[in-house]
Length: 333
Image (cartoon, rainbow, N blue to C red; front, side, top):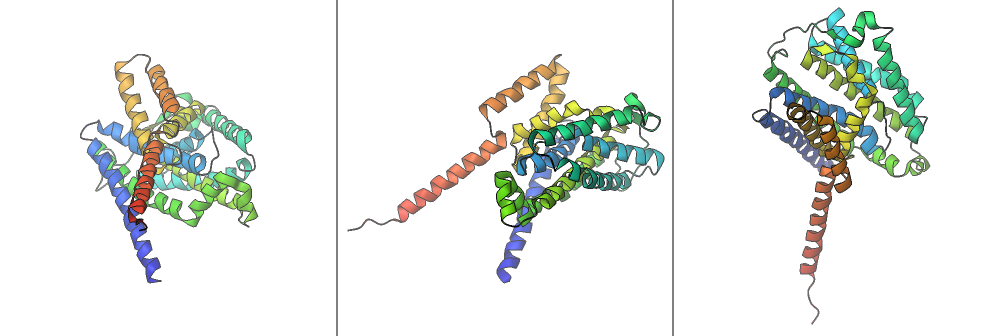
């Protein structure tokens, strides 16, 4: 029992330390990059983490993830415009509706595998995109989108960029601890097992559908949270946030950082957002150069940047272990 408590404390300490390192790095970044860019990196990392839970850890590619980002964005935007302008309440509303959509949509999409799973998600994404443009245009502003009335808050005023950065870092701090705990739990191990061999998980007596559904609900809720934060950041919401082609962006950021690697979400988000912001300033056809860079990363580093970092760390640890064992062996005289 004492050993279990000690291991639990060690795990909590490690997760808190990880969260502090990440938010500390992002906070230091704002001395070198515009605050708005750092906020974008932090929010986009949440979106990438939500996508990577399904793709990187469970091994299922969902093309239509901008739908869940857009659901969070429009939930927060419409909540602040028509119900209550408090941005923190809108975050909870977006988180709740994102989870609810996951509960409703999950049983539909998770009964399909491979390309069918990807295409059903893509179809739902297109459905949601045109829903806010045409049938709901009187409320959403249609293709033009709509500005959102955001209430000033205290002690951290989200209308102030520096204060909102702190809000995003606090959200990330909580999320990192939750995410790391989730991955190290038996549930997280089962997700990886489903990725490796789903039939074996069934054979061992686990309800694989329930595991996948829980992961999907968590994922859609986090994606919606990211969408809500984007709306509070820009005070504006438009259909562009849930444009189906944006799925390629989150897939690219995930692969560049390293799918199925926790830190890869932050590395990929940093590279993608920073390049996107700066290339658009200095180059006319910046999308082409960004595409060339992503292709180069995919060809050279197939595991992603952080994926290769982890590979070399494991290789170094293995080499060190073998060397220590070799030194321990005494010659027989």
